Length: 110
Image (spheres, helix red, strand yellow):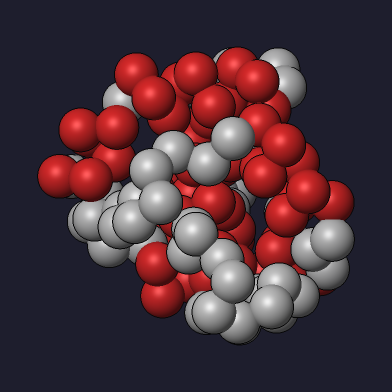
C-alpha cells in the first residue's frame, strides 16, 4: 500500500538536497506511531525501528537515511502547516479505511 502521494501537497520547509529523510516517510512514521499509541517522538522512533522491515516492505517507505531520530521527527512536525497536514491525513485515512470512514446515519436521527 503506497500512501506517499497523499502528502505531496504538504509544504516541505527544509532545504532541498540537505535532507536525509523524505517528508512523506517522516509523516507516515509519525502517523503510524501515533495510531500505535506512542506518546512522544522518542516512542515513535523506537516504534519505527521495531517495524522497519514492515515499513519498507509493506508500506513502501524509502528510509534512505534510516529511521529519523526523535529530534528530526519533532523538528519537522513543529514547522508543518496544520491545514495541509489535516487534508493529507484525511486523504490517507480514507484510502486505508475506505467506506468505513463515511458518516452513517444513526437510527432515529436525521
